Length: 178
Image 1 (tube, helix red, strand yellow):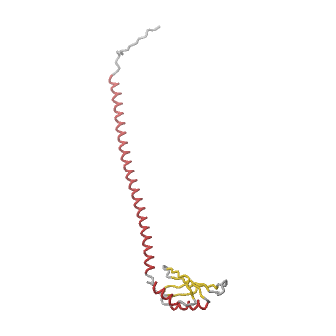
Image 2: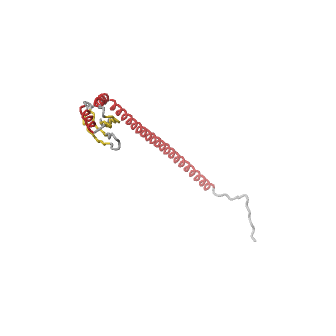
């Protein structure tokens, strides 16, 4: 059997300069890694702040553009409504109704007067005792100064009633434009 030598004090010295070189190179590598990490972290922070800034600008631009489009659309709708009201108010309503009233006959009953202000057209529906009363009323409307292009659009004799009245529709245009 061989003798076993146990040396718990290790009296042999390894070369110190080699251990010092290992330690120094390890510390330099750790320092370089820390510097590299800090450089990358700074670059990431800059890129994140730039991304956040761009997203904020894009969101703000999109939102302001969206609001501007909504505001513009709402403004256009309001202008359109105002123009329609102005157009209807500027029509010669008084002259029109006076002429319709002056053309009235006893044998004719008006059922509806439907104006189409944008097209400057009026539709008059009524009922008369006979076709000659309708034609007389039509001639009276054709003489009115506020109307032009007056014509009988349709007529129908009501055969189910004993008096056989004539239902009619007359179309006319305003002669005077505001």
